Amino acid sequence: MSNNEQVISDVSWFYEEDGQRNGPISEEEIINFIKSEKISYGSAVWKKGYPDWLKIENTELRTYLERSSPPPLSGDHVNNTLVWVLAFAPILGMLLEYFIAGAIHKNEYAASVAVESGKYWFVTLVLNVVLSYSDENKLRKAGHNTDKFKGMAWLVPVYLYQRAKNLNHNLAYFITWIVSFLFTLLA
Image (cartoon, rainbow, N blue to C red; front, side, top):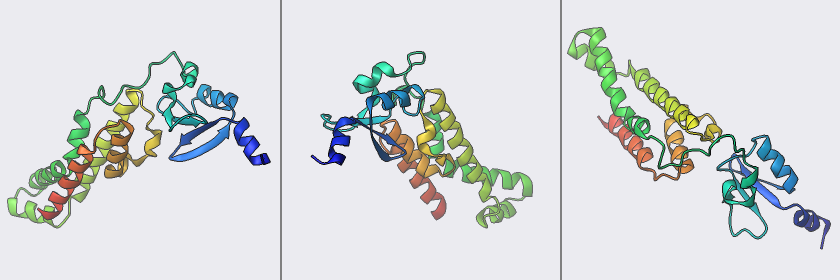
């Protein structure tokens, strides 16, 4: 057995961080990562003998997770109202653009020309970003580690995709946003 193989067999744990496999590290090190909250509920870990990566709370390491706070709400218990509003935000933003242009121009034709020329594009952008950040904040309050989203709330389709994967949801709201966006481009 080579020295490299010996090191790997003596050190038993691997962990996922930002989509990267890290390790091997000793059990003492991984316990310190748990205590310092570098890894927590929902973090994927693996060691020799596991058939696949497991969430840390489904391993013997669960005893080291902080007991003073509950685990994050599961995907079934997170309120998804805001994310569904976000899914239709491209269409809602377009309607809001027409409303604002109508209020400013006080002439239906001038308002329509202003919107169609892209004068108020930023309204839809702001609506999408505000809804996305608001939803991310709700997830954080539900106990989810939104650091995994890497601040992608401003890039809505990426955020929606990552949110669905993180909560083990299907991609329905992500697909709805894409279809809504395409609809506004073709309208």
